[in-house]
Image 1 (cartoon, protein in one colour):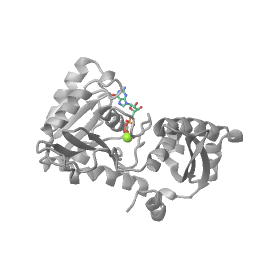
Image 2 (tube, rainbow, N blue to C red):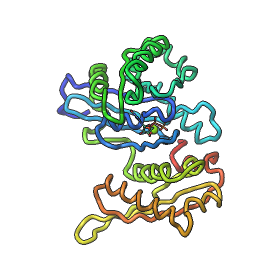
Image 3 (cartoon, protein in one colour):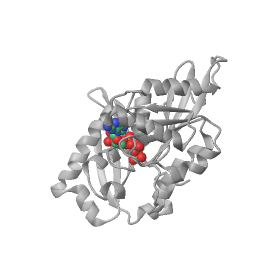
Length: 304
Ligand SMILES: Nc1nc2c(ncn2[C@@H]2O[C@H](COP(=O)(O)OP(=O)(O)OP(=O)(O)O)[C@@H](O)[C@H]2O)c(=O)[nH]1
Ligand SMILES: [Mg+2]
């Protein structure tokens, strides 16, 4: 606890849960007013629980972004992703259940039991409000009210920021008095290297198709800080793991053209993130069935 915190200081864990692709990560970025977590148009982009911390003199909100709930787990990594998603029920002070208004799917069977016994405020966030008409929006509110006694229902568009201030205000109003859990200048529980590997993964999700994004993992293996022309310069080595030779071939592309593009796009994203010039060296390695391998899943941070 910090010395200079007033007795009116508020704090809490605000955890985000929902099906894949509904906009959980986009919503966290919108709430924080900065890009912290990666986003893509493909489902199952987020693989870990990631804290995004919002600090003011008066409060500290520790948001958790989580992987989308997967209904049929096909490999151990997906089980770990679901465990990360469901861990939010253990320590939420406020829960945000996010749904996509343009897609009627709702994780009814998975969160029913959990929500029955929960005592904390549960806010239903109807995201992607920009994709539906006012009539559909109003109809959906009526439908969702039948499902649960929500503390509040808010319509948002993480894409064009509508409803975000209302949601933020609701969250702050529902926070309880309490000290800061983390130093006020801390923005996440994850190190820089994690976010760098995520930015590379985000570009893999954008550039490659079919099973490639789902068969790959990225690890930053070295990070060397130096100076070039009197300015900070970082040399980053990252390894992309895939499962088969054919996937390695696709990742590299003809004459290395695909990985070259990945390198260019990822370098740009990492430079924006770090605010420094970098040199990015990418390697591709095959690790068969890494998604079911306990020791690899441990080294990639999926298992304790
Ligand atoms: N039109 C519209 N698109 C949105 C909105 N919010 C998110 N998206 C898009 O929806 C897609 C998924 O967004 P993400 O934030 O990655 O969704 P997620 O719930 O974190 O997905 P997973 O990590 O895979 O569970 C992306 O293409 C976003 O740009 C919104 O309010 N309106
Ligand atoms: Mg996400």
